[in-house]
Amino acid sequence: MEENQDLIQCSLEAAISKTMECMAFEEVMVMQSEDEIPVFVAPEDVLWAGLTMKMPYRGQLLLEIAQDYGLLLAEEVYGESDLEISDACIRDALAEILNTIAGRFLNAVVPSDQVFQLGLPSTGHGELTVNSKPVRTIVVNVGEHYLSTHLFGESFLNLSNSAPINLE
Image (tube, helix red, strand yellow):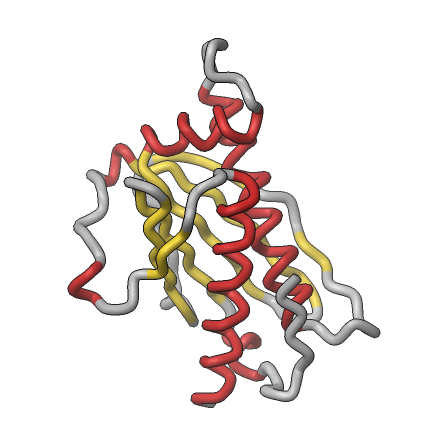
């Protein structure tokens, strides 16, 4: 089980880092201990995106950021800082980032002869009630902002440690 957790940790950290470096053009630093993780913003200021992973592993990936960071990410994703970015654009950008993270993560842990299937992302803001404990939570510092990623799904605990890891 410990080896599976290491595979999950390594693969998810790599997926988050690569995605944020490519899409937000910022260096990513994984917060290693509880002491490094700051108190997150007030629940009403949280913007979230969730994505169901359907096969071969069933679960959900959830991304949380502060609303003001969402605006900056949308500007980076859309390449427009002079235009007024709507709430819908911010949510679309966050969903695209989450979709990319999920694809990179599954590409790393699913053997190349198998396919994976994702659902459609959902977005919202405010506190999100989740009925289960995440298999893994990773908080990263991106520039001056924080991004929290939660992986849900007991099937991820069954990952074979010999699964190919493709971190590209």
